[in-house]
Length: 194
Image (cartoon, rainbow, N blue to C red; front, side):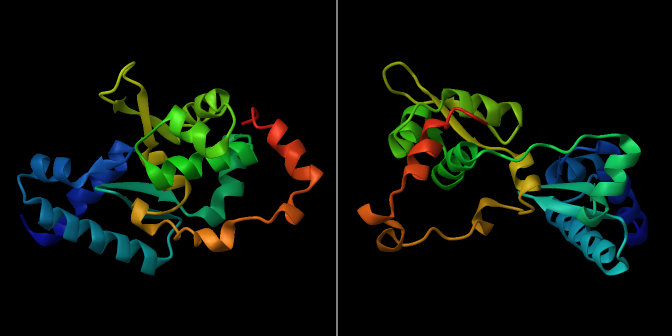
């Protein structure tokens, strides 16, 4: 297939899917090698970025998706009459961080790290499609394990978990007894909020 026609076909597929589509699926549909499709997708990404269009192609793990530029979120919301999503609570952000950096993890692992029940927070993160069940551990009771989703990557504008910022050293993050304040205690009591 001619290069220009191939690029147009890949662009059409990514646009029509609406959701992230794996390069492997595009390659199968077009009878091409996956590596060639990845190269075309990357070329399209660069073209969209250089043209400063209102839409762009994002790379999410092994998938690609078209989305709008962040700077146009407000007018898009207005036209589509969408309400702004409420931000994550501190508890939800903590649970999400534990999962993102340690996945796949069980609920008991998360609760061990945080020291409080996380059932409500986990349910809220699943409802927001930021985490999902990834299977079960082969242990007594077969506990569920959780991991992040492609929607998580989109929300944080990263293409893979490798782009997460590094964790601080243990020595730097250990709070002293003097820094614990009543505010820390009251926020811990509200951990059921998402």
